[in-house]
Image 1: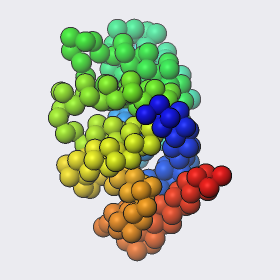
Image 2: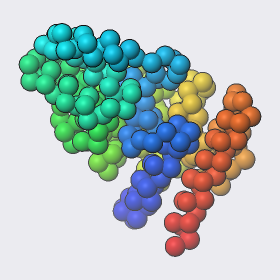
Image 3: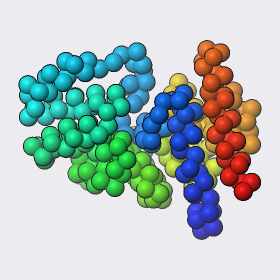
Image 4: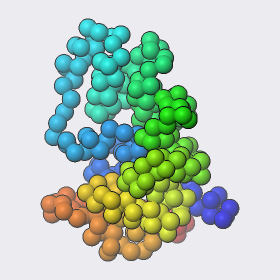
Length: 257
């Protein structure tokens, strides 16, 4: 057991950038959120792929009312969605300084920090965004994702388990949990959990991509390719399959070394 954790974990962790290509079709990012939807907001964004935030309007509202926590939160979310991660952190950090007990702002700030790669700080801020007496399953799952990025997979899995006590079989949490097992190279467990997530929501591209990768890592490439290209136009399906093959080839290269 200890041998698997110490030796297998680093190669699995190195798969994250390639997995992002599989999920996003080439969009450049480094956030675990984009793999799993772990930090919130992405599933709604994916569902409204053609809708863009009115950045000019939001920017003017924020300049007019920089102290309004609701305006700051909306503007920070829009900055995150448009890839302006450092600016989102700056906006939400200032808002939290002005409203240090605002749980929604703390949650938004924690997610922005995670987007920006500040995983330990994100975890700490998210811990202030809810309480043990009134836990928020979305924040628990986000904390788990931050811990996974820090390589603390077993701790992360405890947070996912706590979230699942509140929302049993919630597919976004199951997807995060499955990815966490994959990062440990516990592929059979990852497949089991991701299979449950897929049964709950077969339309979530991130769940399909994570499950397809786990199948492919077990040598079941044909099953993985069928899954990853489901319900896609031919050109998109071909791109997803190509990305999956690239991920698996990189994994094989590392195994052969």
